[in-house]
Length: 378
Image (cartoon, rainbow, N blue to C red; front, side, top):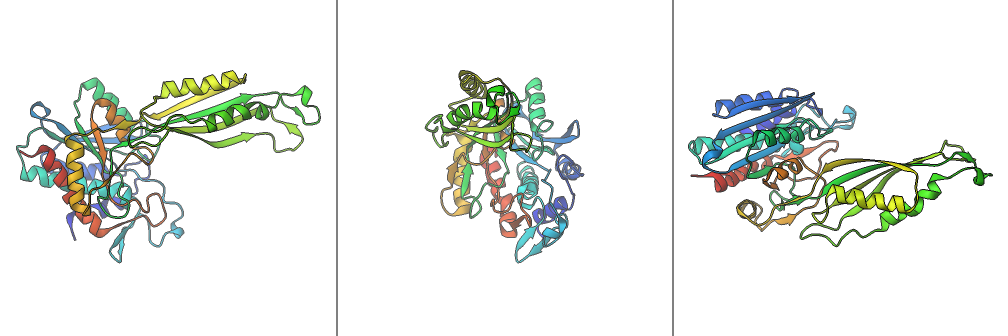
């Protein structure tokens, strides 16, 4: 059995449902320490974070391999063909929670890092791994908190490779060069409850809010930005009323989210939305949650190296994309690092019977090794 396949299975067997690391980072730190890495365990609240480094940033750039050891809950065991925390190989495919998202990539990072420092013990710059157990959960005490610590310590990060499952049909066919920002609004519109037969004695917050919500939903915020799609607003939840058909509700609650490109930042979007609500004369309260700002990696050594390496693995130049949701790279990019995402095929993440092809998993350390070598070799 290959080293990466064994390590992936060992990690899957640890039930690290977010934010519990379940010993994954200790297993990894022991291996990396034996390879000559300096390992620092950073625990915030109930979250474990591992910062492992080899080399010095005094004589070259810092390359960070970014990943997470936590997984989403597996759901009912009986829905799975095999135990989600008992990895099983069937017909050349490895099954288990986290196989694709992202214990396979984390294992490949470790194996590639070990191989690189063995081949280039005196490499210029610094190779680092940053792992968290809080990517699938609230993402408060994970990389977000570590990034703040790095800011205070003056850590310099130049390049970041995130191991999120990015490929579409075959390994290396997509290179993610940015992500949209995410901003969530929780809106409460206050009215006056009353009987539907006497609307003059009540104030219906649903009727009052609908024109403003329609305006926000229909707005064309921009026409996109380079490889980014246009900014969009989606209303995801609407709740009002007592359940009775003859009662005008006294309150309306609305949950909406904006996914936005670098034309915008969170404060400007918040101001635009609040101006619409105010113009419609609503009596409201609005709570904002800023999940992360957009980031975009321009042409440069990181993007060029990734394009060439992925083309050699996929047999054709990769699609360069900024699609998808968010990743922890949104916390690293503001530190000044250029960020890309490269990982296995995204076909089953968060699903029952999550899986990764064994052949792809066994090729992944070679892919990461080639990227590291292009960027940090002597």
